[in-house]
Length: 310
Image (cartoon, rainbow, N blue to C red; front, side, top):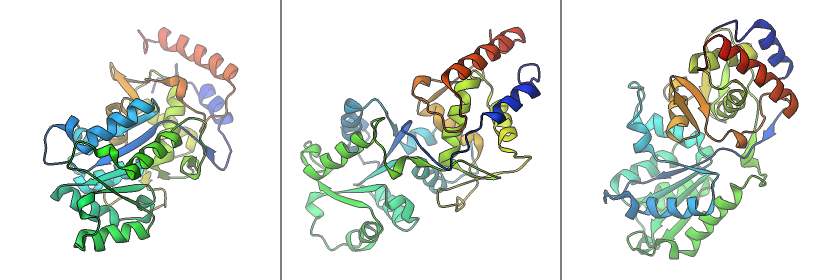
């Protein structure tokens, strides 16, 4: 890290601006995890494709999370797919699972027998023809997930009129409403990180807040400054919102890759920038707009002077 750009005085100034609130309500970014890859390879014609179009038509705040498209760019070869989906489920605000293939049945079992924290943001969509079915899927994982707080909807999955289902439309419209910036609920509540056990959901928001001031900046420098401000000397672990560890370790690069893939941030010449920085909320730094602009202008001058910006 270039100390001519990120001087000790600058780091100390940031420490003095750390927010001491016990919690914050945030509204951006909102991630909707769509699960249940169908047999039909044409995504646009799939249930997920139809729901994605509906959600994005009605909200500009939503980012759609698709496991397979993010997994393709996953460089963490030591993370298995189940752990990766566990990570995506934890970082997402909503999970919608279409049960329409053998793989989606496995996903349902994984979510149902994983954590209650996932069930509370999970909607399970089953084809209407199975509404009165007594199969293991119905009386097993579906029933358990529903008891843990999941929503179960029956819709014409295998027909073109998917959104003719009033239940599914209600779910979709509820997501859209809750993703508006003015909406406040327990789902938007985040507790600031302290110590070396890092809540991954809060970390993403804190990182974006810090990046809003420091951009453009390398991933390594961004993490180093984060650790300096949080008083983390060496090793730290990412955990879920209930404090439990992931099945396998989640790495910093996995988080950065996710944000890039979702087009929340971008990487140009190995430097990170936020794509819609006007939407970023203060969760880590408690700066007035005047102080933020003043310190950012000073920082940019040093970046140009010492060659980090061209």
